[in-house]
Amino acid sequence: MREVNASEEQEQESSEWNVRELSGSEFDELSAASRYGGFQQTSEMAALAQSDGMQTQYVGLVDSHDAPVAGALVAFSQGRFGVEGSLWLGPLCNGNNREQMTALTEGLREAAERVHAISLTCWPNQVYCVRDSQGKAMAEPNDEMVREYERLGWKHAGFTRGYDALMNRWNYVKDLREFSNAGELLASYAKNTRRNVKIARNSGVEVRRLNRSELNVFHDICELSSERQHFANRSLDYFERVYDAFGDKAEFMVAEVHLDRYLQSWEEKLAKFSKDVERWERSLEHTKYPDDVRKKLDTAQKNVESARRRIEDANERIARDGEVVPVAVGLFMWHERELVYFSSGSDDRYAKFYAPTALQHEMMSRCLERGVTRYNFYGISGVFDDPEDDGRGVLEFKQGFNGYVEELPGEFTLPVSKLRYGVSDLAHKLLRH
Image 1 (cartoon, helix red, strand yellow):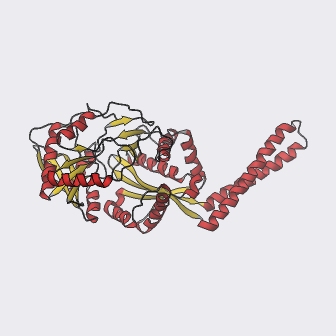
Image 2: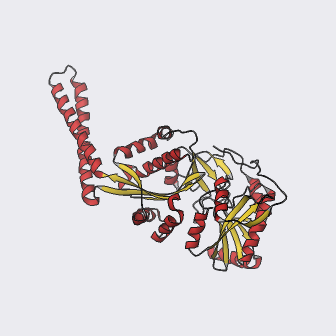
Image 3: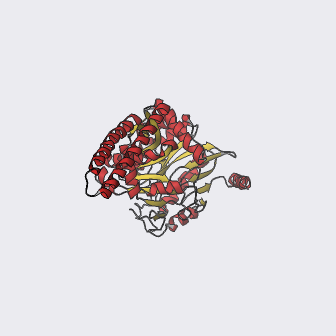
């Protein structure tokens, strides 16, 4: 687990920083190399924003050799009171580095002024505090970073808990560096999670990638979860635009239950259990230990009844849903430093097949194959001490994979036009009340 705190290693320093617009390829190279890089700070994300009518710019901080050392993708959109800029999980800059932060902030301000923006809002992808799986701090929080942003005029929205509509402040992460294969990875999970992976495997669950024409399947399963958990689902158009903008870097995955195989496996088990019943019934006629045999016979008979119920259930499901049923989906975003579990949905009628667990294990296994050493389960609520919290189920599901928590600093807003920003900020406060 990488610790990040106020004494984090300082990046290269220079008194000759310059700010200029970067090309898409320059920015992608910076994002790939940066410890703060992520899919939301890439040219693909810029393409997605542009498809939604936003104007984008890559603001770069370069050294005396004109090599980019920090930067940010800024997306400008029309708000209620004027143009607003957003840096999603940016900037790509060490918030503890005063020289770089000062120069980059000034460059960002100038870029915003050129499009007459009211403000810029950023959500730094720099860890504020590393915590264990139960939420206990593992290092001192990086308060110096927060003070540096505030010194430069960025207004901090505070240390919130709960789910934010735009960006997570709390992420659950698993470090994959110590695992060389899927077996070692599986062994690292909690006992129930290991069991659920095996149940899924033995229940005919298989994972595959969806193509563009199948994105309606993804959308419809996400809709089931949104209705159950009372949140707004993304539109099919949005998912299609993600597919087009990111290409192979966005994988829409589905976990399907092959009920025909599931039925066949239980029919085979029924045949075995039935033979066990016959064997113990014969043994009972001449055994010297009738009590022991009756116990084994009772177990075999219970196994037979259980298998018959499973077969009946499988036949009912096949009649209703068909032989191959999509039951869980996930959108996974690849970046050089991590794989992000970005969006998901599942069919609660198939909960006992544990398809979402199988999906996670499959994608982490693919990380090992591709040499990606960080798996980002993405958002949790940040509430660890309330069993009734709305995010409890999500937290416990992710905790089963035995990772850790990264608390991010949250939202900062830089007023660019102070008068118009003041009017906008007052209006937002009044609307909240």
